[in-house]
Length: 337
Image (cartoon, rainbow, N blue to C red; front, side, top):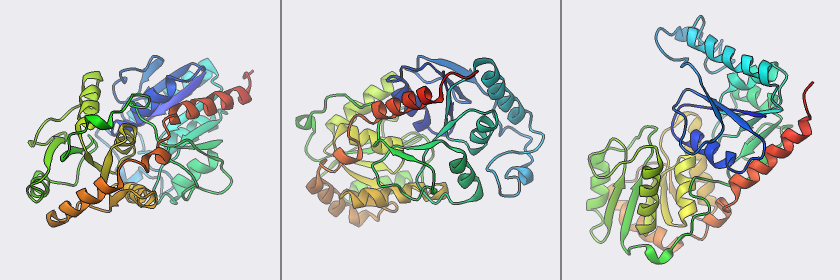
């Protein structure tokens, strides 16, 4: 048995669970505060939220040693009790955390080996260092070499993967001059006015939008229909303008479409580090939303680069490689007494 903790923020953590669990031969029980994701066939344990009021935020970081452990919060206590109780009842061979330093520490204190989902960015604070030090391994969904992980902890680079891996792509389906703007549900730094200004500055291009919370066009939420809608929009696009989040970038990579990747302001500068790596791969990637007059050149550059660099970033079998590693790690852990 493998336990798997899923952070509630954004859709990427949930979709990684779905993608990898499809290839696992070891049974999985997943834990999270978000709704159970479509396509996940294992057991799902709903956890109480640990951020509902009242929250003693002054105590939340334990003096900078952790990220979120507010004192006397009932939800925090109940969720940790649920995880520890499940470990005592089921004796898992392995636990995956994606992501929580606190759950990583809890599980390891219960004597269970932990594999931590690696995250890009400036993560050298005491809490992140603790999580890495406690991990049996870090699972990195991007190509090597390692990007700033702590010494002594093995890093397994499997390449980016998404819910769309394995689908046949059709370069001929792309409509010349079509731009798809693909934004996520984790919040956005770009306004509708900035999107419109870029659109107006590129009259030779037709823009289509998939931006939750925007009045510009179609926006989608979680679920099979939404996924199919996004995939069809990706196939229509000649160039995709996408934020720098892991999951969105991996979906564009799976579709093998030319792209302009735009970093948003996120904790630990995660997206800035990702666009830095993408630039090193030869892709068009920028540190923030460009001024309107830059967009004609950016789209032409993306058209010129094409989709070739995506093959190394997302080889297409990342989820299978991640599952193979986790199955092997669970086997090595043996049968607990």
